[in-house]
Length: 132
Image 1: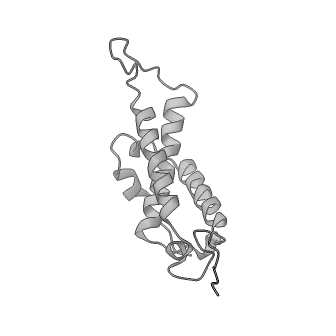
Image 2 (image 1 turned 90 degrees about the vertical axis):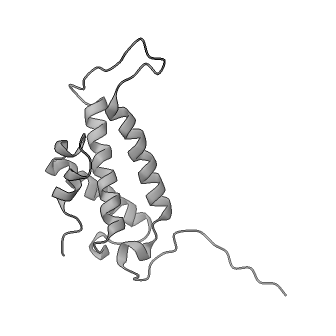
């Protein structure tokens, strides 16, 4: 199977987080992608490279970096008591952004987006109505 994404392009997509992307983080992002694909009845092997896949895997990877940097071991303590928000944790702020981005993408992506129009389960539930 050909690569679904280019790691270097993902690293360059965010100045703050990109330099922290490791192979372990990319492996975990792939697992998240496989988990999401399985929820749409798509096997990981059936996923084809595309812009939308790169966007989703990037969001997964950046989220993992944010979690490690903001909440993980040896995470820096941020804060400024003079501000009303009480935080200068840029990783925490970016985490919110990437969580929202993932939610948006997962709600929009269909099995056809993952497989390149190969048949799969509908991305939504529907019931046919018969009138008569």
